[in-house]
Image (cartoon, rainbow, N blue to C red; front, side, top):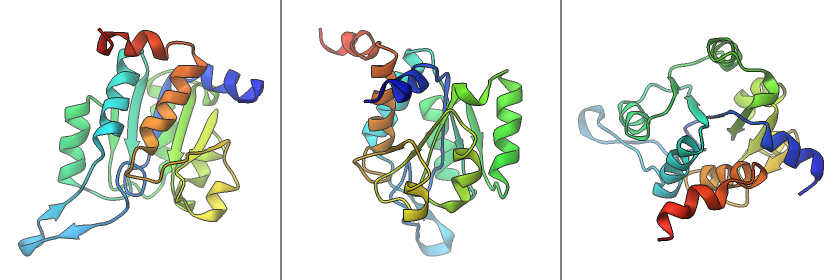
Length: 175
């Protein structure tokens, strides 16, 4: 990892992410009477919990309204959850102000062009492996894993590694 990128990652205090295509594989399933079914990756969930254990804040900014996402974000203890967002940049600015953060202290992981305004501003911009090609050309990091398949966990591990705290955070599980 290049020294500049490692320094950027080490400065991160909050990890923000999109939902559909990042925490999920982007598929939307609707059953009878509009019941939604969504698959979340447990590795991503543990990654978010590990981020919290390391003192990092996390947040989700999604264009869709989802009962499943609201439940999942609550279970994981996400610091911020914003749904039905049409202007992600405005929400990003509100989160930044609320938590007294600088752009350099925020990372964002996305998958499509709607995420570009934030990715062009934040300290570390990441895209999942199966992100839109235009997005992959604009970010600092492209994960090896696709959305909904552990990409968020992969990214969180990079942040923890750059901070030099991954082994410390993992230690409780290695007893």
